[in-house]
Length: 263
Image (cartoon, rainbow, N blue to C red; front, side, top):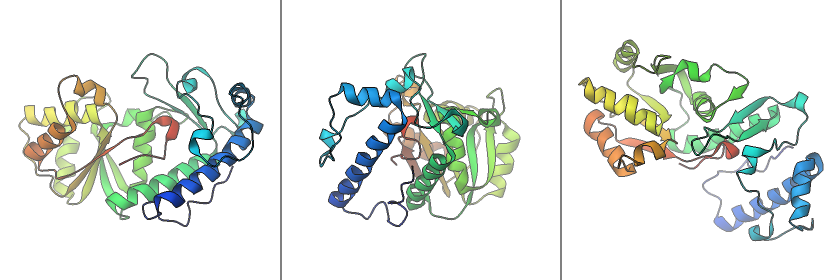
């Protein structure tokens, strides 16, 4: 299904009332569309006693519990049209969500991510240091949340550099060459991996670098370090203290909403 409404507007300048009206209009169309295309979704809608008359308020629309994506293959496309399968990290249990994308949907996700990110990091491509290993992005069909995030943000980079080897040890050869040759750049990774493999490792090895021209973007993985008493404030303070990074962007997103993230 093609949704063109966002192509010609600035996402952060539309007033709240107009944006809500646009959202409700799209959701009404999507409910009808998915009901026609997915028998599982149609059964769920019928079980809520939902009537298909157009709704004016968000609270009148049927909502799907996110956990259903962990237990059911919810898709509105034929198997032959599956372009990618996104998988959540499954940090809250052994099961993970599966999201099926066709080419049109994958393209929409990329376009929206671009519009969102350009408001925060500009539209010039920068070299990108990924606090992860290249192995993470090798599976071209089944994508984890980490894989999808890395590849999603890679569209803003001129070149990718991976901070970790495949065994998740630090590749200091890359570290030294990257920071010597790059003035403007951005760093990307999952929060817990940045804390454990970037901040703590550089501190342990007494690596002296000043990254005040860099932008650090991180998301996910909070549960692992919050248990250790690390808050968003202390995370940023340590980045400033050890590396001089002043621009830190924490984003939130779910694989079920990939492309639509919150900075």
